Image (tube, rainbow, N blue to C red; front, side, top):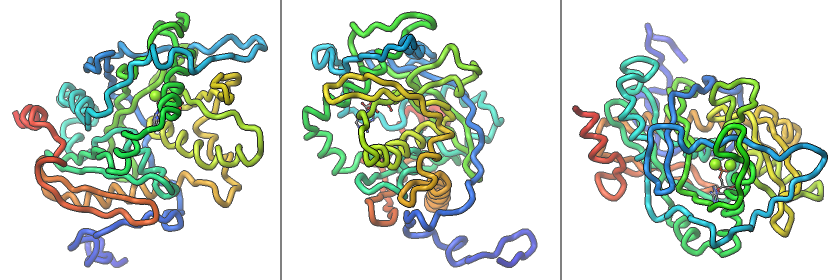
Length: 378
Ligand code: A3P
Ligand code: MG
Ligand code: MG
């Protein structure tokens, strides 16, 4: 690289004149030092109620309430209540960024970082970033992310791929029950009030959600993202969010070294990516037996998950995940140049291929709602 005054002259034919046409995802390309990642801070939160209505408060937050540790193992029947006490969210409704935009609209005047911070930021869901982090290691499911720039800010919103939609519509009954069981575990582990008791007799309504809104930065990309939080630990050493939050997970009981190895390689990667991004320090796993009963619990510290694969040649590497994510964000920033809420760049990825991009205008891909664009233009 040559320096000409303050201007960095490096591959100008690529970096300065033409946007790149695709982005490779091979892990080997992203090996290197861990990039800068700002300690995530919570800017606020919101809740979705049993009817999936937005409330700008913490009413849906639940409190971590593990069973007493008196030598007895838990015995949670995760299939109890299925399907009669199950109220699943309607997955046909594509919510895109709407609830998060609601929060941004309400708080745009008093965001920390000062006026102008939002204009330089990327706004998205934590779950979308999780998918980016795991992309270099993902061999099964592709993704599509729609991107628009509006008042400087880059918005990223996932689009369900045709394959994902087909899978959802033909989800086998056993998989549907397995989904229920993940939520049922939360009910056995959470109370509605701090110090309260759990109540597994009620319904499992997956419309209800508590979402934390966080600020961070990856490399030179300021981030504003929101993620669903399972519960808060009233006994946590620090009462400051996000460090008091707990992520709950279920997984199959493991009996062989091979099963453990595959758990560390696949599941722990997803668990790590999901909780590292918002700075959630602990993941509490309930291991279920073939009959669907959780008989053991184990707490995994997010910052220690990598140790399980550090010496595994086919393991994952947090630096690769974060470096790829940073590269994708730069790719998106350089592609989406025009500031226009009706212009959409669709980034598409399938395992084994690079990320590609296509340009679209208005329906069906435009995702910034008129109510948001108009209110922000006032
Ligand atoms: P488990 O992951 O414990 O099985 P989360 O863990 O992110 O809080 O999600 C709660 C539950 O929602 C999951 O519990 C699972 O049952 C269901 N779930 C989440 N993401 C899913 C996905 N992509 N496909 C199917 N089920 C999912
Ligand atoms: Mg959750
Ligand atoms: Mg969970």
